[in-house]
Image (cartoon, rainbow, N blue to C red; front, side, top):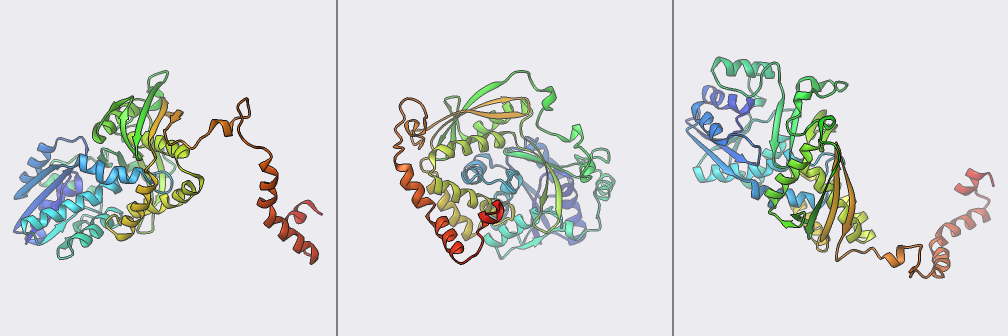
Length: 410
């Protein structure tokens, strides 16, 4: 059997290659690593895969594809799972699974193996994607089958075989990092009352140690996509990295939440999303002036649906494609600039402008230059309140109390 494995070089996948060889009689194991901007020594990861039993190891730079095909399409709808999580891990999985399927087909493999746990969301994201794109391939999930039921047992297994691993019993964190953010779990943080240890944070400075004062920056958007920083055009990868460096320096983007996993349990998740925090804040503010009220309200409801689709591993589905069409249309005129001021642990909007802004100062002002025709308000209020007035009159005629009469005693 020829197996293509998702390989990160972390604890689970480091153990997975020798375990598959020992327990499944795999004739050939091919390791695949996608570079999503995790900031790791990828040549070393490739060498490690080969040294632990892989016959081939592919390492591929997917950063620009990640930004263009997944991050921006999730930023435009404002997709934040349960209103908080920017979905950095969830967005990376369908891309990695897509490439795993493509590599498996190209290499004539029989199966794809992943290192996801039975409790996690990632098993859903990998397997639904693979089934959608390459239903003929067998899917293997060693962590749902093997005898290594605790992380401590995995560590011991690796140490027995002299496999270098990135965790220890003293720091048993599971880290997943990419260009869009970082996820940290396990260890002391499984106690909901315990504060995340200082060494758990991987990217951001502690806000108490951030530089004093503040810094202003301006993010430019075209059709809902960030295209410039402080007036300088930048591609997506460079822009995200620059914003991430700035936000990390000021301790911006730390998230500590308890979320509802796909499998039905609640999980304490600690995230870092420095660039995502700034870009979601700026994008939302630009939409406030570029979208009409009805579209804005409808899109806000759809944003949660879009976030759920991403979180639940349903990227390659007709529904996501249909919703993306609406989102793209809604973003046609979301063009302009948003100015932010960042300081220790805080980002605030200080200005916004757009050639498509629906804000009319003449209509909004209460000062000289007011262009609003106040005489229209009387007729508007008569019509706007007509339904409520009709209900009250009918109830009163029939001797029934209205909600208002119950509250004020009339």
